[in-house]
Image 1 (cartoon, helix red, strand yellow):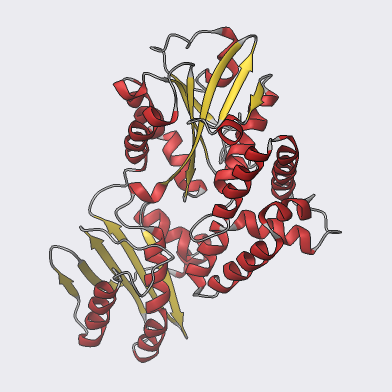
Image 2: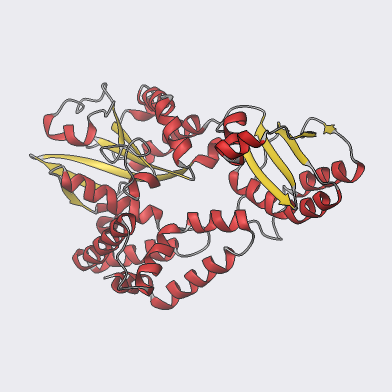
Length: 394
């Protein structure tokens, strides 16, 4: 079945994409890890194809089931629908694309079927503004499946931070060899740090200035450097051996600097150099999601039926995903959106992440497979037939 899925994308195109991902994953230890995580679905599919006799993990089993759903869907669609599905796959394996949008679509459809809805892929079949048409007890609802990036709510992008840390790491190792000890470089970046994992020579590199400032700080043995864009401070790293042994260095640093800090550790001999960076203000991931909903919802739902915005929040890890839920940030911004005129077509907003896609359990993932918030002001909010898809999960 996985070979059939790859066949939908085109075997040559798929092979070229896997080779490209693996090549890009050698860019540096941190950037490479981030690239492998970003393309975890593609690599998992290929890993299962390469080792067909191996027992798949629970996450791989779920991904394989979604790939099988894609193959089955291709057999059910009209020629026009199959062409649109092929275009979606081609976009997924080109440029900055991933399989996440397609698998989010397939997973959302499977989730709604498990709740007793019939599901039609109207976006592929008829080219509708929305993606899925649900029906249950003669009631219909539209679903728009959107992928939004948590990077949109960060002033300091993780991709940029990984590239910076990889770039400066060899210089830090050389510097540590000449200056043995434990050091902590604190950075505050009031203007942020942007530029993800795919910067090219044609695009100005936003990391160059910061890299040069750090290099100058070390070469001149200064303790601090600051202006309106960058604040740097170099201090001894005070960490007892007991703390390091009990917690490990990175968990200890995470506890000290908080979940929003960007951390990198370089070692050489007995020396340790830690970089810890923060923006000048807290991350606004949930706020960015609300603003994006306000732009997309009016265009992605017709208003002739109740509409559901199914959001996949990409580029987040389990710590951040749990925090967004436990601090009620997603709930607060979703409920605020639902009071706005832009939400008049929306009966519910749902959220999911890779943790749900990969079948992780509570408390890291949401038990019901998605986080839902119903719009109490929508005329269809209390229709019993829609309850499994729209009833708030909190």
